[in-house]
Length: 346
Image (cartoon, rainbow, N blue to C red; front, top):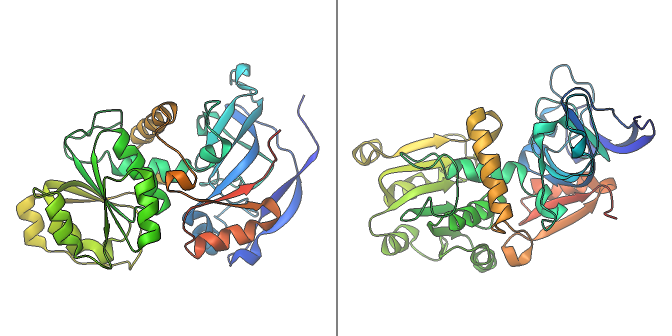
C-alpha cells in the first residue's frame, strides 16, 4: 500500500536564474511498472542542472524538479521489480533527463536501472557525487583506439593520461579512475590550492599552467606524448593538447569552457592520427552507459572513488530550502562538489 502523504520538493516552471526555484509540497508519488521509489537523502548538483534550468522546462513538462544525481534508499517498488530491492541503498543517475522528476525532492520515482546499488561502506555523499561526473569520466577514459570499453584494475597500464582541470568534479573522478585502472596521470591546474586537490585525488604529476610552460613540462614528463586527454576547455587548450598528444591519441572533450568554437593544427593532427571525441554522457550508446555504470560500481567496491577534502573534492552542503544557493554556487564555479541535504540520515 503506497504512501499518500505530502513531501517537500523544489520545482520551476519558467527559465531563469536560481530565483525561479521554489520550495513546494507535492503528493508522494507511486512507482509504476519497472520503477522504484527512492527516499532521497542527498541530491547532487551538476553544471547541466543549472543550464537546464536556465533553458526552461522541456516540451510537455509543466513543472520540473531539478537535479540528475542523488543517493538514498528504495522504499517501494512497482510491478515487475524484485521486492527484495526495498531497503536497498542506491545512487541515481539522469533522474531529470527528459523526465519531470529530478532528485531535489524527498521521494523520487524512476526506472529501476537508474537506481544502482550503493555498498554499505560508501556514503550517501559519495553516491550523490557519482552520476554525471563519474560516468562522464569513465567514458572519457574508454574511447581511445583499441582501449578498454570498461575500466578495471590494470586495463590502462602503460598509458599516460592528461586530465585538464584536475581540481574540477569530472577531473577529480578521471584522476581517481585512471589511477585505479593503472595509468600514469598528469593534470593541469591554475594555482597552488587546486594543485593540492589534484595531488589529493592521486595525480602523479601536477602542472600549473599559469606559472609553467605546460607543453614543455608535460613533454619532459612524457617524452613520447600522452595517450588520452580528458579535456574540459577545448577552445582554450587545443594547441596544448596537440603539442603533447602521442601518435593515435584521443582528446575526449566534455565541456565548452572557454568558447563554443576552436581551431587546431589539422596537419599535425592528421600526421599523428589524433582524434577528437565529443562526450555528452546523456546520449552516449546504451552499451557504453552500461559499461560505465559497471566500471564505476567496481571502482566503488574497490574503494577507488572517494569524495571530500582528502580525496581532492571538497563538499559544500545546502539544505533543500536553499537549493537556489546551491545552483548559484555551481554556476559560479565553486571548487568541489555541491550537495543538497534532502532527508536527514537516520
